[in-house]
Length: 116
Image (cartoon, rainbow, N blue to C red; front, side, top):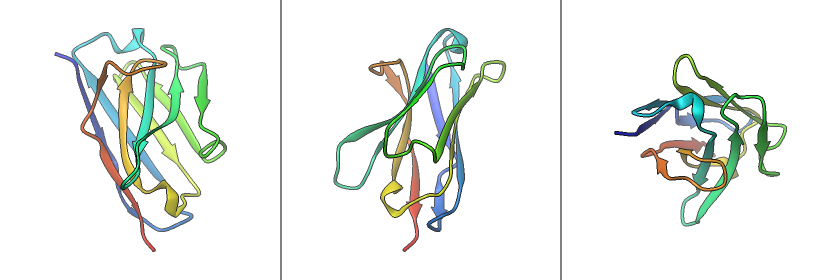
């Protein structure tokens, strides 16, 4: 069955960096666009970034553009989100999902917390 497992979250200071990973299994990873979304405490889901199946086309929310980089390694069935210049408002649970404009599968998420 389709599985998406996020990792790499943690506690980080403002201005710091983290790299999130999403290990995919149960489907042909290289055939699907993927996306990252996040949910801040008490708020709804926010789309963060998307990448096409080949990894050549990427898109970002204005709130993270220039600070985050999405990438994928199709040989390793893994999606990444390199996050830099982190801000307190980046505190959220980050989910990876399969799909370009909507997700049909997503993982359980990984928590990123910016320390005060």
